Every structure is written in C-alpha cells, then in structure tokens.
Amino acid sequence: MCLLQQDETPLGYTYPTSVVQPSHISLVPVLRSGLGMVDALSLLLPISVPIHHLGLFREPVTLQPVEYYNNLPYHSSPPSSDPEDDHLAILVDPIIATGGTAVAAIQTLREWGVSRIILIAVLGSAGGVRRAAAEWEEGVEVWVGGVDEKLDAKGMICPGVGDVGDRLFLTKGK
Image 1 (cartoon, rainbow, N blue to C red):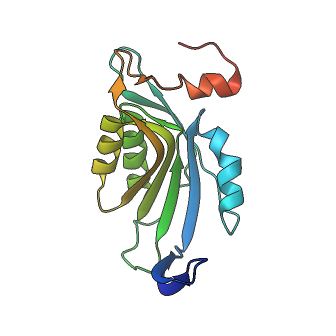
Image 2 (cartoon, rainbow, N blue to C red):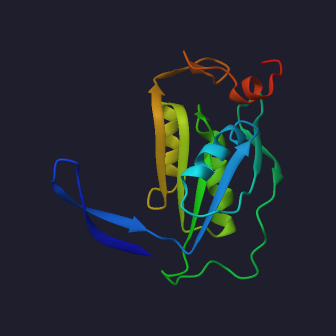
C-alpha cells in the first residue's frame, strides 16, 4: 500500500512524499557478505521482519553465479495480483561487481513471488549496477553508496575493496 502525504524540511518547505507499506517485508542477505549489513538494516526498519538467506558464489572461471543455499519459505499459491497483498524483499549484498549474482538473486526472488525488490549495496561497478537494474526494471530499485567504473580480469571492482565476505570472516582472499 502507498500513502501520499506532505512532509516538511527543517526550513519549513513542504514537499510531497509517499509512504510505502507492503503487506510483507523480508530481508534477504546474499551469503556471506550480505550478513554484515543485516543488523544495521534491521535497526532501520520500523518493524521486525523475517530474514531469509540466499547462498550464491561466483564460479571463478566463467564468473557465473552458482546457488548453493536458499532458505526462502515455500509459497502454497502463486503470487497474488491484489495490490494490497504485496511483498517487498530487501536484498542486501555489499558489492555489485559484474551484476551476475544480483541478477540471479533477483530472478530467484521473482520466482518466489515478491512484487518489489530493493537491492542495497555499498559499492558497485557501473556496468554491474546497470545490469542488476535492467533485470526487472519495473520491480527493482538499486540503492548503492558508490560506483567505480572498472572491473579487473577476475571480475573484481577496481580499485574496489576486495572480497567483503573474506574481510568479514577473516578468511584468505582469492
């Protein structure tokens, strides 16, 4: 559900806003790196929401995503066309490099039956962010903190920050 209202800046100017209140919200981190964003995002949400996990890794030679874990609950019926029965998935992955992992996660969430996805990342490559946004233009919003232009031959963002999952869990980089 979307409510239109007026808000006011600290200087007294009013502007129109919309408050989105989906009937279901899920937080979906991409394992492992997305786990580092879950606590902070959970604190920002006005209500407690279920957390579901998608395990995806990038095959090192082809750079194609491979799903190894999925704990999305099973739906007993197809997605509803009722606008009051909407499901927002907040997909979190700190890095969007080639965009392949984001695209695979978006496809999985669409098959699961979500009506909207907000993909939140800290850093992305320009091409990877465009690829993720183009996967489902009417259903996906991409929120990214910064964008670097290039990828190296291994599909890593340049200059980038390296493998966030390795950094979070103090494991050896690849």
